[in-house]
Image 1 (cartoon, one colour):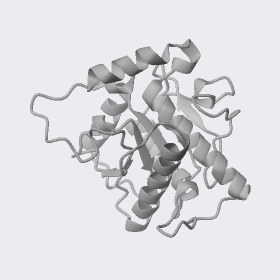
Image 2 (cartoon, helix red, strand yellow; image 1 turned 90 degrees about the vertical axis):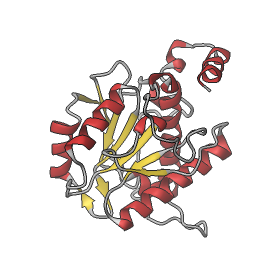
Image 3 (cartoon, helix red, strand yellow; image 1 turned 90 degrees about the horizontal axis):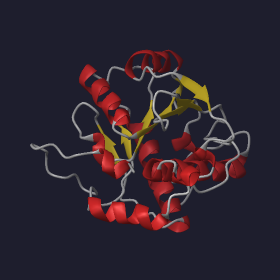
Length: 239
């Protein structure tokens, strides 16, 4: 379980708002427009989780990996910008420590600014230098809640790759703009069009997001058939 992987530091800072609830987070991109899409996307995903599952996330949190303790967040959405100037060496170390301790990074190389091809190469070669492979249809991520059959689209529908350095992959990456597919404004209007599959693709994007959160929280219990009561007891012990 994710919650068991993180031990508070002796000199830990006060708990952030939402720390006693499941809370999703996104890396501050340094771009107000991109941050708005990420915020609304994770907020909309949270509403879907609340409606369709027993998970009721707190409002999403914008984080700076160099400053904030990432251990409170089971999923960290990082939409990589063409300019990586906002990620320091301290931030890079924090991101590596986060995945090594059980956090899941959803690494996205596509945004309103277009594909961040060169920046993604830098991230995957230097910041998160883990070997990757394409997600196959047998991976537990395909069935943590919905049966995805390898479908992991966002606003775009590119191939999802997962890291092979950890027993359970902790880096999930594609150029899909998941936040763009998830984001709805305060009036209930989709903020970005989804192509080529339209609203059906958007629904699959939400299903993928739900599976990612369940995967981050419960790991491979679907594969091992662990008893749900045992999982709940462990969660209670952490509180």
